[in-house]
Amino acid sequence: MNFDTLGLSPALLRAISDQGYTEPTPVQAASIPVVLEGHDLLASAQTGTGKTAGFTLPVLERLFPNGKRPGDTRASRPRALVLTPTRELAAQVHASVRDYGKYLKLSSTSIFGGVGMGNQIQQLRRGVDIVIATPGRLIDHMQQRNIDLSGIEILILDEADRMLDMGFLPALKRILSVVPGKRQTLLFSATFAPAIKTLAAQFMHDPKEVQIAKANTVVSTVSHRVHPVDAERKRDLLLHILAEDSRRQTLVFARTKHGSDKLCKHLSNSGLRCAAIHGNKSQNQRTRALADFKSGKVNVLVATDIAARGLDIEQLPMVINHDLPMVAEDYVHRIGRTGRAGTEGLAISLVSHEESGLLRDIQLLLKQDIEITAVSGFAPTQPLRMDAGAPRPRQGGQRQNTSKSSRQRRPHTHERKPGGNTQNAAKRRGRGHGGRAQRNP
View 1 (tube, rainbow, N blue to C red):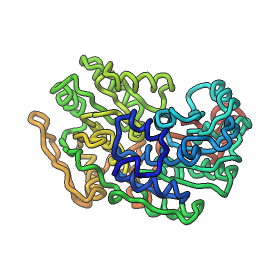
View 2 (cartoon, rainbow, N blue to C red):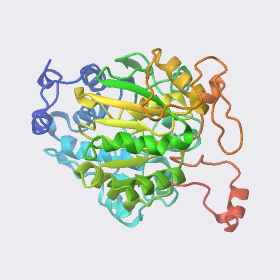
View 3 (cartoon, rainbow, N blue to C red):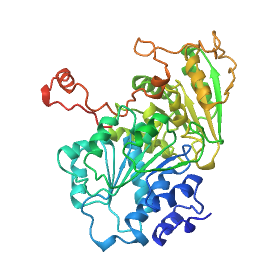
View 4 (cartoon, rainbow, N blue to C red):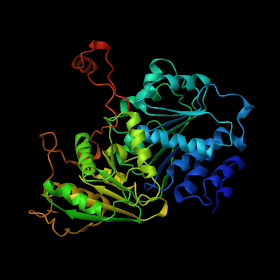
């Protein structure tokens, strides 16, 4: 199947050709016709299989049928809204919209926190067809009446499982209250828990469903490997692995922001070109670190789970979990940064005895065993336990709740939960009742 059989306009086909693509991926081939027919859609596919183009291309076709704007008038109110959980993903989706819409008279913008609102306000006032936004900053603009969402025809939730979790739900409901009820709604993600589907049904109309692979599966091009090691020797083992090819691009995941900075400093002091990215970094720092990593200026990027979604790095050969994620589903998203678009990738996890339970959760989720191989000179003093009583690390001095519901949803650092006790939060910041109750992602 070729793209020219999917009902896209010559302008879009030309832009696709410019990107070097000729055949749609399975999720694109399945999703594009459904979206073009005007249906609501729940679409899930493995990370790195082209989901962004799966909604961008048909949305552009619906907004610009046969490559032309209806009435050929200048944009006034946004007609499509894409919501994403992180700034980096918003910027990446916006880049795709620009690339595929380059031969259309299209105006678009991305709005997210961490940067000033001035330029965003100017772009919104000039008029845009498509807005790509994180929920927190979008609500800021809504409160200041910088944006009119009454003309939204299509609403897209990218990484919808995170957008619909309890941390984002209040913000989402607030946004849904001002967009038209009569609209097309598209949800795209690598994973959809049953509870998420139930929740999505509340604001979607008879949605079609596309599922390219079983939930929580990873692409076959990724090889998995576990190296057991004592927790205090993880940094030394990481250096040992990275030293095998210091020029190889490697994305390293750490559990905490502070831990990411310490690990990056240690790697830098050892002679590696390293940068860190996490929620406490300014947007300029995050953008620069990612750009340096993509360009090869730095070879190692240490990140928290903020980088588990939305980072599209061509031919990234290796991902290393210095710390396993506390939620098994996040392993799928982390290692989805490698092995993309048919390339081979390697996912290595450095696992201490205390993380045995987390590793067991991951294997149960993937329904497959992962090769466990000790590295010579780094064999742990305590072996991993893979039985039901396997230990799990403590976080913040408290034992983690590993019940099914807890594993399904534990807040991430992308965005503080909107709402809550805003009065107490404001007092803690010393800003009175007028303090902001929300952090922009």
